[in-house]
Length: 166
Image (cartoon, rainbow, N blue to C red):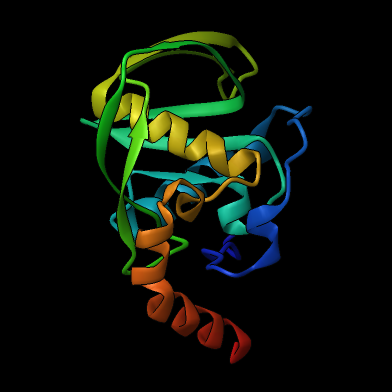
């Protein structure tokens, strides 16, 4: 492949709902490896299909030395609450406080098509939910308060100008 690039706001694919992954095989493994490489090169923790121009339900998360592959993920349960700062590779230079569940159970397929049940808490739960949001067209800024959106407005306009110049 080798042609994937991180899509930045306001690229319309970031707002698009994704389609389920239906085919598993060497091409999917190659895609996952390329997504992981891009994510790590950009110092990211996670990366979702829409962020590299693919409207598919696929995301990768790398945390504490483990690569989590989330294909067609479904949130089974969540509990508790945590607030913490989040950033996003599609929103360079923008960070904000986001409230999310503290504990989650997610069902997802791996690169071989095997359904897995993943339990996560704290930062890993946050990362899973952030990437799963991307698969539904929901973005980091959608979690921000009106005040925070006003504060980052200048940076958002700069991202929009940068995108128009591409």
